[in-house]
Length: 384
Ligand SMILES: Cc1ncc(COP(=O)(O)O)c(C=O)c1O
Image (cartoon, rainbow, N blue to C red; front, side, top):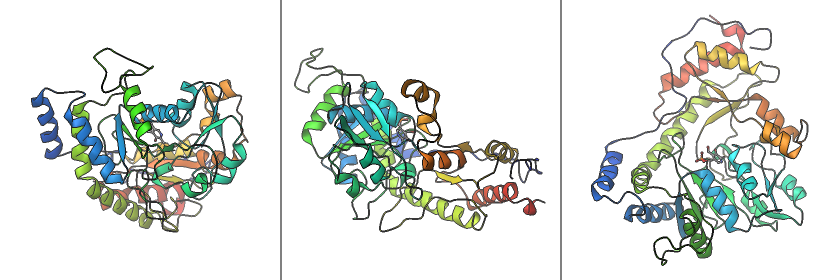
């Protein structure tokens, strides 16, 4: 459906398909009930049990559970030394939290353009953005595709990985995303590969980082300190034991959920094959493996995206522009004087992207319905 061809088509099927949906079962209920019955709802034993299970799953020494992915990114930046007046080089094609966490510390988020294929921060562009004020590099494993960490590791600044979308992803060298030892942050919001409702976790190989993060998530209190004794500034970024119980149960079904997401992605590739000008998520290449999170496509150039979203909705199919470029958001334009044209690859991709319904329980029939509807919207010849 190009501009001027945005007429509504006859709905294929009016039964709405959700955009995302968690998988929850009796294991989750049992684990949560266990915590409720114990009476230890926060800072209880489930926190450590969940953290150790998650660290073992990734293959890294430490994990610290926190109240959100954003909280985790904030603490991870502090742990590597981001502070007032420093800079954090990151991607403008991400969820806004990746940049916001630098601003929390009065540091400046410095954006660099993305790779047009993987949509991840381009290491050459990041290298060119480094200055003597750069305190951290924050690659984002966008849509679960591994960022080129070996390339970033050749650059000098400390790395914090935004892995909020990348649970289950694997680097070309076989190492799980989150296992390289830099602080890496995963998110557990309800649309993620696994969920605790809200929540996040930081993995790291550095015991010093773990100690500082654990203290700062709990108002700056060291584990051996008395109640209400605080030796540094901290926050309330704790994850409750109830949420950790949910996380432990979700971790137990993670492989099945990841496999189901990958199967839905395969079905989408088949359903959307051959639509001219439509860009699909890049296939795994060079040994990198995506941890499937969302199915985001870039519409052909010249298509009226808003009209396309509206027309899909008439078929009971929700879709969302995803992501808008961070540097062009009102706050970032006003605070940091950004404008169009600074990061052309990101801006082109952001202007054409939509997220389609995507969740592990999605049936082949539902995927086919989305594919057929999108084909009708984009290729008028296929209209009934
Ligand atoms: C790339 C990215 N970074 C950070 C976050 C923030 O995570 P949360 O919503 O758990 O704070 C998200 C979550 O949606 C994300 O997708």
